[in-house]
Image (cartoon, rainbow, N blue to C red; front, side):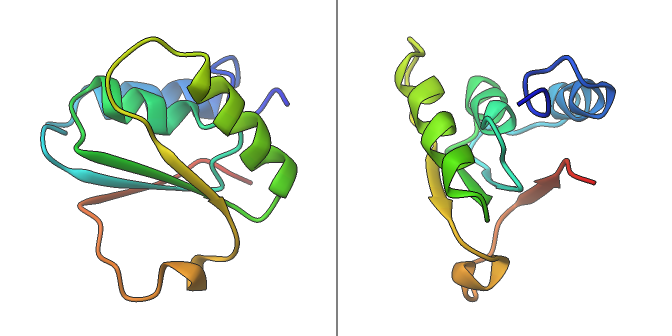
Length: 99
């Protein structure tokens, strides 16, 4: 579960990119959410909604638990499935931190 903890270089770079973007009121989709850290970061930066998608059900279970343990306003939505599950929903920003 190293991917998504913030300790992997690509996760750190994605987090830095989120810091540089104006996210207030934006909707964010995190494809391959893993631990869900990018959704949490987006909400901390003011995103109106953050949705994490992963094909690994166990990753979604872990992400939900991590989010439940946080103490701040807003809650990300995590679900297991393929990108097709999003249908024609549009997002202001899509992040994807995966190999």
